[in-house]
Image (cartoon, rainbow, N blue to C red):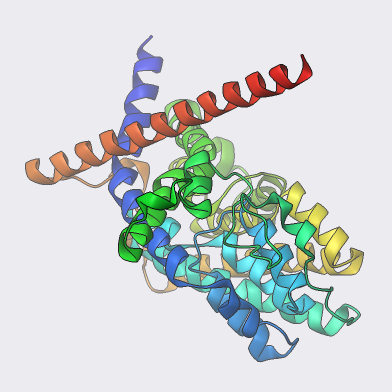
Length: 386
């Protein structure tokens, strides 16, 4: 019973610690989602030059797309004319980091990871894109998406809108925002429409995309703090074996950059080296079964193999570099561990408590909306069959 109480206490501490930063990240992500048009991405990613690969990595890094949402975006970009190397670079950098994951990294892991993660993601993305450029056969980009290919959007049209139409886990609120009101007489000002779209995306679609894995990550991190002995993970040491283990754990997982952060907290608390944890933070979000299946179909077997090889080798190399930097420059104080969570004053603590309540209520609201929508869909399908 005491263990369960300690588990709940550790979970609540992690949830409260991440809540205000996650809300801030969702706000910035929602603003970027409305202000960064897909046409901008397509215009700068059409060639297989080093410049296009670099642009794809830099553009993709801050975008609020998880390993789930990046798939339709990447397919749309590829079919709109993006080259293989640029598409791979975008596929690596976008899920590995983002404005929301940077803020949560600062809260849970400290300033070092908040700085290292985006730079590591951009480096590994450029490396993966260049590997595909030099070692995968070049071919003409796929033809633009036909009107029928956009049927997955909530409001299909002849013009493809692959990345902004919906994510792979869109919610009813987000779709309603994208499609507009069904009552044209109740038209609102463009600024108000923008604000509603930002709210629907940030607190609806994006939060729904990351909620399951975020809660799973927090629970697992709390469980590791509560029950896992320190020497369980440290038995692998700080070398290539430890990093290979973390990469093999992360590669098949279906997890986004934000949700992987609480897991990293647990791994650090269990005594794993900062570099081995970075390997997990890079390999986990960048790869999953769905992404690999999409790449095989759209880019070919060799591009897929180069993609996996690049993610694996880049994450291990960056992990070694981080371990060396932490040791050489005494950077350990810039890393937050579970035993050294932030201590907050009374007024600051109130902000964390309110943020945690707001975040929890938004998650419950999204779950309720999805449940209602599920029953409505089931009911309508049942009525159609009778």
